[in-house]
Length: 165
Ligand code: MG
Image 1 (tube, rainbow, N blue to C red):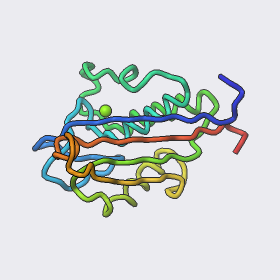
Image 2: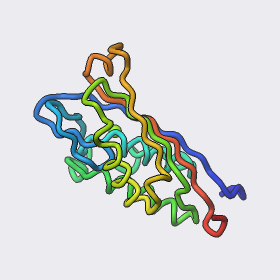
Image 3: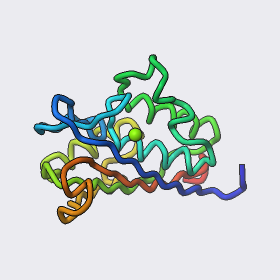
């Protein structure tokens, strides 16, 4: 690993929406008439964040660690994926400094759930809720996200070398 005391990572994920699926973002179940489809619980916010951490460490993406054709990953709680990224992070001597996240969803309105999502992710990341930025935007009714066919998420995460905080 480089001598830099900081590492920055970026993650992106998108999942399709369908009826009869739960909508889970950042480990929080959000009441909605559609949910995200995926091999795991399809929590694309947590996937984007985990990929930001793996990326900051120069490691492969979550598909490498949790293949979407492996039966043991079916229906998996994505917080376990995030925990794996954190385990890699601490084994390489880094901890999470802060994260900044964006949810792009035409519906539902995310503002009632922002605090719960920040609390959920902060608990897993072992940082304070105010060390997580979480924004939500629509896609102005354009494209698959705007037509409510999918939800996309972006994440940026800063890792700090332990002993440098
Ligand atoms: Mg995903």
